[in-house]
Image (tube, rainbow, N blue to C red; front, side, top):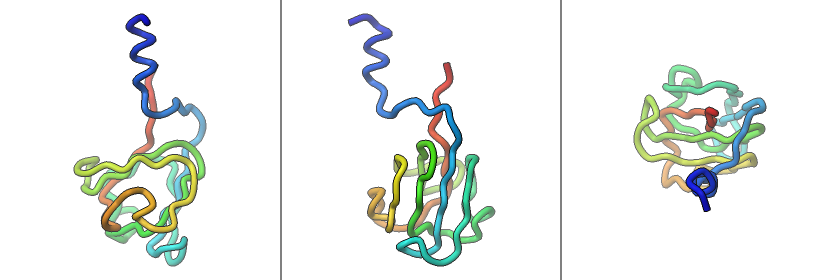
Length: 106
């Protein structure tokens, strides 16, 4: 195995070059206020007007949630699918301060 093969085998996520779409909700089970995103969000409260995200739907692409503003703190990796409550993405509470798209540059 060469160096480039080793690097490719270490990737944790598939490469995504298509569109990115994420819907976040203020309540569990996709209820309450909803907002759709296609770009990174360094401050969730400024955009969504809530400090917590209780459920979400990853429609396109792969996303990383962060507990704190500006992509800091504990991270949660989200694949395409439905997350009916914050525990579905591995969090112990609904606090999300920022999130961004997972992309690879070549």
